[in-house]
Length: 425
Image (cartoon, rainbow, N blue to C red; front, top):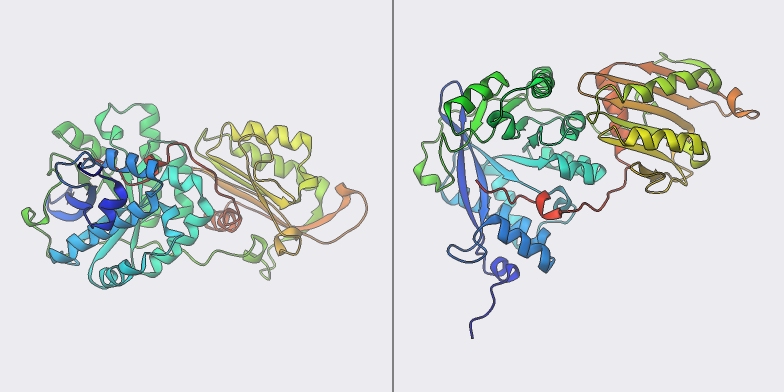
């Protein structure tokens, strides 16, 4: 009797394959990069990425498969002697990075880091699932000299909202943006992406280009790079004419995540002092700002203690969560979901964040924060004094938000297979 083919056996026998799709410079038409796409054993029921990852989910080996796919991509590139002038895009599920590479693969990845120009792709859906782990992962990825790309931007409104926290070197537009006529909402999204890319020197890559019309839309969207059947289908690296000179990017160098928002301004002397009662209207204003870009804003708030997350606050934050990409609430005793849709985070009562009150909102076109430090007064809650700064400095607000984001707890995401790199082309 013929043995049943399993994903575990495919992994153990190193039968995960990789094909490569060209990525071209839209001005010159030259290939400047390739994306590695996973496939199962040729001619088998697990050949397609969809079948491969669905079976891996059933067997409980998604993380193992993800490592095997990355290994197949870099192994194939090394064997073909892919030049450093040609970037290699590799899809990755951030949760798998929380688990160290299998011992037998570590030497391979260390060698790849020294020989290849690698771009790690992550998706917005994975980002929203576990933002704290993602930030830590990206710091490690960048320390290896890899670039970072965010995939499928535009497929979900949250992709724009979370992009500032990632600072991608390459922004990959969802293929629907070039395959469908440009409407008002699409134009607004394209404008926001172009503004972010221009501000940081990032590259925009349009996927799914198959026709001249698709190409024209990609150019209007501000794309520098293109990918799709118009330029070539996934296949062997041997069939491609590879570049002599590397494409240039201005790498996003994210600074170390601050321990707390107040630590970013402590010692600067830019703050003032007032009571909580007088700061409350400004806090409410910050929250309302999150509604200006429906579905594309992130709101993160540190409440010191869960006792300050009152029933009225809970109702307000439930409404905000229904209209924002992500809403987080931090404090001592804060449950993982203090109210439906809100991501909570418990803070140890000895953590310096306990002495701070922060409301930070970041959207594609706005950023603002109230950053305050408790002076330790006793007496009526409204009369407690805080040193504070109200800022619209986008970089400072993002840094403050990132310092809160590192505490947000992960959630289980439905359809985890979609978070893996089962993208067939």
